[in-house]
Length: 490
Image 1 (cartoon, rainbow, N blue to C red):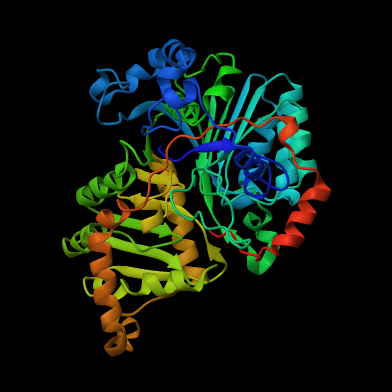
Image 2: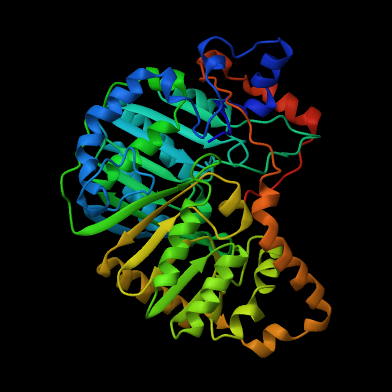
């Protein structure tokens, strides 16, 4: 991933204080770090030989059996292998997810690795902090990687409490603000990953904020995650390790991975980065859609996919596959529904069924195909997720999970959604026609357009307690800059 990870500073964060001060002082990130060429990963593996030995000794022996066809070396395979022998637990909304993940973090004894887009300093963020503090007190190595755009308003007290407890924190690609506004929208860390003690993995779309709890009413979001055990955790752990800076990884001790067979589910971890895996998640979707014979059920928060994705959905419906989409009816950003609706007539004409979910904002990113294929993860089906952001999805072959999630989504469609008709979608088509033409042109050309966005080089700096900006200074900076309030909705 060519985007960079730098220190998280309290206070608010790097963009508001310490990193700007470092730039003014002329501090450079030089030495061995500067010698590492920018590549597809957050930091060059060659500069941290211990990491390679950790992976080779603890991960590779256990995941070789995951290679496609039962042979080969997944470390050298160009096609990511499916892993057999895993268990999966579906977690719906914050009530399920936060209960399980906090419980598992508090029980950690060796290692906790977390990646997320958002942490808010509300009751959920505070619950996460307390769980991490308990893990650190247990003797576990704890590393938290957050995105600068999504997580930018934590207090110095909140952050320093974790640093003082030995928790390492990274900020992904911090950028200075322009007139108090965040401008670093593109190529964000949008992954939501947790690995605990080398034996438990969580992946989904849920951030650490109270709006993922259904008791927050109209502001609540509908979302999903999974808890997995088994050989797939080796892949997730390896991916999480690749997201750590050189300085952070140097402080970690090898964690033996418990990757014994835990169930019968087959799984594949697919990532999207800005290096060698730019289309892996989309390709897994497309391969499954092309092979569908019975049904495709897709629920996604931001639906404005590539033209070829739309074409494959339409083609599946034409050959008799029942294609059902559950999309936003109460979007957290109004333009999301506008963009999605530009694709409706194209799909409805060939029999695709579209429901708009009305109960609350839909934030999930899940799909089901036929009787056993499922995916849960962080990737939306829009240009940001498919062509720019860093994402992680699990693709799962398990009939029980597939049926459980299918029943759940059909209940949402029946009880809390409005089915769209071709007549309704085509209403006002005469004035929307130019927008539809332009949108399809955009979707066809976006892969090339995405290549025009800069891919940033590696910039790494671990957070130290001395980097924390005093609270009074933060307040002064806020008053001077008059930052505009912006809702984080990615």
